[in-house]
Length: 285
Image (tube, rainbow, N blue to C red; front, side, top):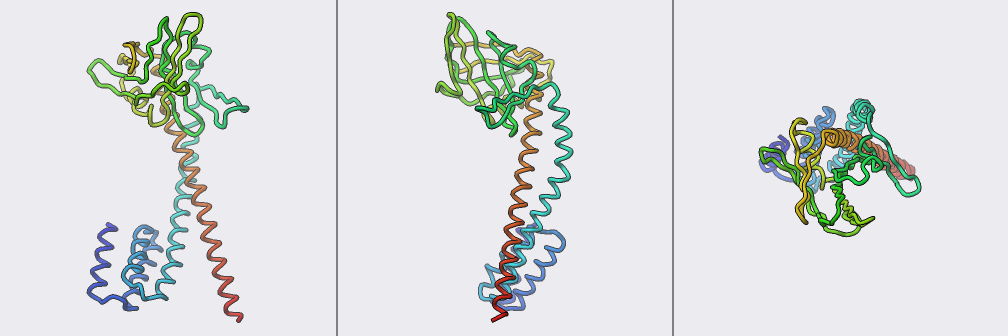
């Protein structure tokens, strides 16, 4: 739609002759009408066309610059209104989704806390191979393939699959002693490979959309062969964590967008105030 608008403006300009004040003013008036009707994207396209096709019409371009600031302010106000209308709904959903989770945060070391499904706490899963998961306050989810056994397998990834062959897998995470670490204790080996954000999104989504009655096989990839089947409890935990992550991520994105819009409005208002003061100073002399 807006591409067609630019083509139409270009055609109009070519027919009318470039550099003519009346034609430039007409496009500006159209942009003003679009702004008043909250057609902000179209208005910005029309304003841009004035700068492209009427470079010599200085006065019109000055008006267009002022209009562009108003358009940008209108966009910001629209974004804020959208966020304000949707945030209470998402926060209400969040309150329901948080039931069943435990919030963990070490204030001495952690900038953000994590929501852990009540069956997924480390204390309740000692000496067990399983798929761990959680989500931080910013909405970033993580999954971890935890291995516990008598000998190391040195795995670097995770593949989930169901009986019909449908599968999802994580990227390979090389051993680094951090997100992929291993240790031995009392003759047993523990390995934990953690997949954060986009690295776990595919497998988390896979668990959330697969019928919960399906058996999901987890294969630890990149090392010696090892596999297990997710328990119903673990499937429930991963699905609940993924759903919580989606809402947390959306809430944080809206809050950031609202804050960004508010700051931009302050900047635009500052520019308008500054221009008014400069104009009054100029008129005084």
